Length: 160
Image 1 (cartoon, helix red, strand yellow):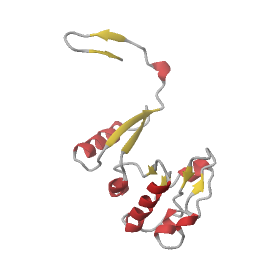
Image 2 (tube, one colour; image 1 turned 90 degrees about the horizontal axis):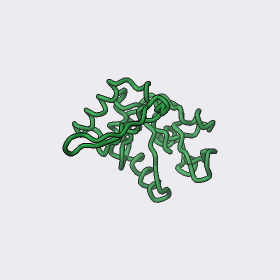
Image 3 (cartoon, rainbow, N blue to C red; image 1 turned 180 degrees about the horizontal axis):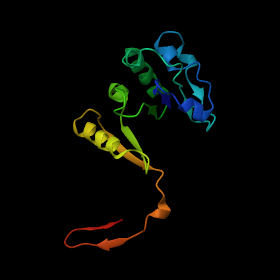
Image 4 (cartoon, rainbow, N blue to C red; image 1 turned 30 degrees about the horizontal axis):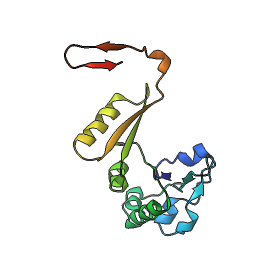
């Protein structure tokens, strides 16, 4: 996991990992690549690159070719790379980082994420501002959903 929400980093807090030596130090030329990758403490096969200190120039750092080189190097060393970014549309970071992603996952928290954010994300996809975009719905209260099955006229049948 690469924590690239460098404006309001939270991942290192959730995982209880030291955030001092992070990607912002690396991108500003003050840290070696070998010092970046840390164990997550969650699973032996899950590593993390923390954000580091909040920079005065986030867009400038995220646009650096050094970040592209780092992701390219990580692709050789890891099976999957998850890039954690700031919320889509709140700041321009997600659009800037789109160049690095094979897939964009937009996580929607049920009964929490404002409908406007979801509509905006769908519009960004339609306008090709974010490519290869998929939506993930989590925190759904399955007890509140009734199971129904039925057939419709002509071609349709489905689950609700």
